[in-house]
Length: 150
Image 1 (spheres, rainbow, N blue to C red):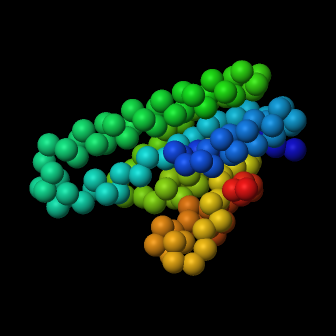
Image 2 (cartoon, one colour; image 1 turned 60 degrees about the vertical axis):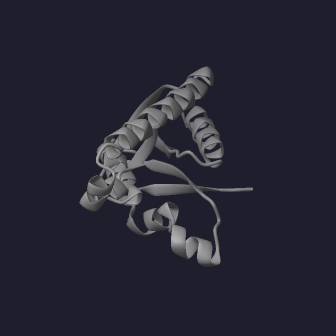
């Protein structure tokens, strides 16, 4: 069974199902749980953005980080209330895709399962938005559990 489970959450409606699935798996298997969020700063890496909005980029990054910390704090409280031993991990990069950051964080933390949500997007929406879950399926070196939207 699993010993180290990483749950990757974001600001979407999928965060709660992912978190609750990971908590239940951790309880059943006695695993340690890390709740992880990846802040995508690739937009801010574009130096043209800094030139267009010189006073706004730093503030936007700060707000993103602050929001992510708040989200992780709430998720940690939910997991602790369930009696699960947890850690939280905030990762960020200006050059890496979210899927790369999550795959690397899972290996670094020595997770043996990565739990992520999938929105089940189809057609043009998927083409434009892309899919972190789909990229993880192709890249991840550890087992994945994809939690689908209902």
